[in-house]
Picture 1 (cartoon, rainbow, N blue to C red):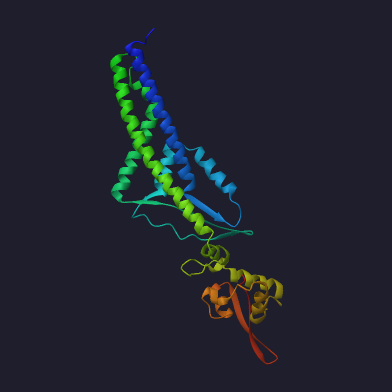
Picture 2: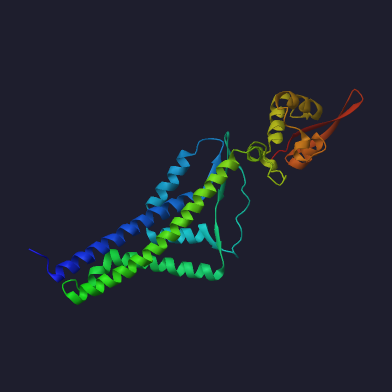
Length: 282
């Protein structure tokens, strides 16, 4: 027995509604991936726990929350203040930095995108919760109207999905480029020695500062260490840690730039020499 015109239309509506909902689920899944991966934590230790935590966090969020987070951090206007330069953080023996990728838009583009994405959230909620309420699927006219609406909705969803896929592809490329950089000598110099690519030094965790601290632990006499003896000890144990690599003329220059050491001069057997210790907190 062939379907009636009404049954055929109802089948079309069900098919189109199902297609829209599947595309929206694909959109949410892709958006969760982007939100979870647009910020990167780079460390000297494996970061599976951090990555899994970010993925789990986004998995619990609704489309509206995901869109809000994307617009608040992943996509910004050109007038938004740039994120601070990545700063290393030392926890135990693990050194890590967090950095993020952003898409910068003009104010007009950002406003339009914000409006479009908010409309998409409303569309999703309408299709999931209110579609049957808004259309009389028991009549030919109601089914015709519902089908026409769903055709337009599918076009809108497909547009957003293509846009999101482009962002996702760009993010994958950025991750690949970042991975190449993370394996470079320049990045290793930043992680190990605290030297930024532009040559400035993050002194609190500079490699040479860590070496000076270790020398205190090994050579200190009543808390003080001879600068000359520390230099000799570091040359033996960390030969790559040299003042010149940090833009300094001497070891005393390093101690001064680090701003965490005290320097004093003591006279022994008629010879005046420089000694140092870590500053004591008050």
